[in-house]
Image 1 (cartoon, rainbow over the protein chains, first blue to last red):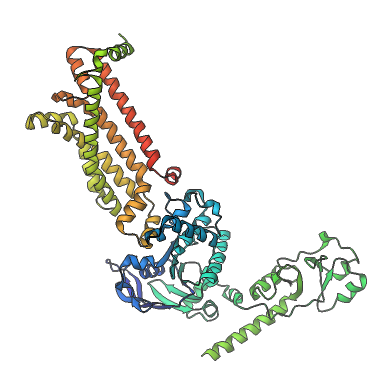
Image 2 (cartoon, each protein chain N blue to C red; image 1 turned 90 degrees about the vertical axis):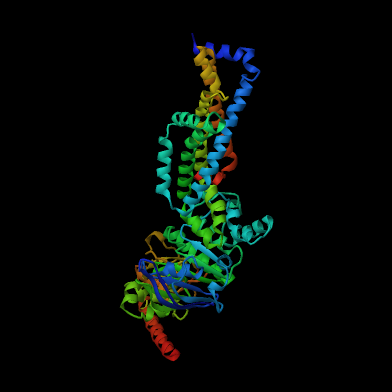
Length: 376
Length: 222
């Protein structure tokens, strides 16, 4: 465990970057430091591997003062990933990744074999091994940066705004990849970002910092969204924190209706039977059960439906796997106000109205409150 | 009275290819002066430029030295040296070194300063010592510029080393100085041609060195 104990960083000109910060970073989890520019989040990260020396206070790593061991030994035990990757442009991809193992005295072949293994782990094609950094896209370079940090299998990974310089789609891919790698490897990751969405998405614990290097709140993301400590945190979380909080509520409890679902080859009796007062629209599926679109029962003719005349069904959510946020999003996007739930193969498992989702949200909130009180 | 005729006459005279005043001897002397001056200038300019560039301090002082060095008239310095020290190789070496240090010093400093700070930060963060950072991260990336500085220094030395002949030393300048004195323009043109050819060979040599020592990743992205 990394313990930051009342650490202050004061520069010679009197600027205080970090002010008596105390933080316990749990093992094998992702701890995110988030805050506006100048809040001292990067300084805090850099004090962990002593790229910046604290002015006061101590940083304990597994109970030992980080100053007890030589600085380079400390740094070699921690992977370090920075914005724009910072690859060595004169080295091939495989040699970039092999840097730390080579520094630790591994043989060239062993280090390269390890590097190739890591390329696969971070989702890089083996054919890129002999390329140079300039031949890779920004997202690929960042993957190399992560692989390089993991090369010597350090227990700790320090990541300083690693995904800030890539476009949103690539960033989402990299975040998902990081979560997947973390599932496999279980590192102790300290991750700095200015993006609260990123923090909430990947963090096990999120430390919100405010200008002047003070800790505003340190909590799991769901707790942060439901109980912001003060106006600053609330403001920093943004106006839609209620919606975002829904990401932490599973859709598994949603009651899906199968009545208003008809196959494309349905008979007139089936169509008539499925049209109920509860559901003014019917969802038409193909023969495999995949959604085609919505229709008013009166517009449906037995045995043949013109797909062009159906209302679009929006983006379905995977029932049980996706969160209530995804389900609500589907319902909001759907022209009928109903969300379509599908299984992992994309086959319809049922439909649910905005109203039902709203009831589920209220239920989840109530449960959240009781749980919080029970925890106290 | 054609320059090409002069060149042809000079190089086809078999007397010019042998003896202590023959082309091989003069060429060897000239190359020797050049290599010695370049080695001394590099020994002074490279370490100072690399270290100041690495730490990013002393840039102003370097610029001052460079300007001062460039302002020194090489020929004047040679005459002054000879008047005060008498004849000798050192009188030639000092002006040549003074001429060659500024380009080496300034380009190696600038080359180190122009290295992207991100990989340097990454290197420190992964636990590299400062010396490793300098030689394994910064130098390979700065190398093309540094070699460019050495190249201009080498070319300047090659063309300026002719002054050695003024103080009764050898080198290709011998032909020019003697030729002018003897009104033997065939010799003057021949000597000048050799100097120009040597400068071109130097250029080619540095091109080859750059090809061999600079990583493809740096060459293509620079």
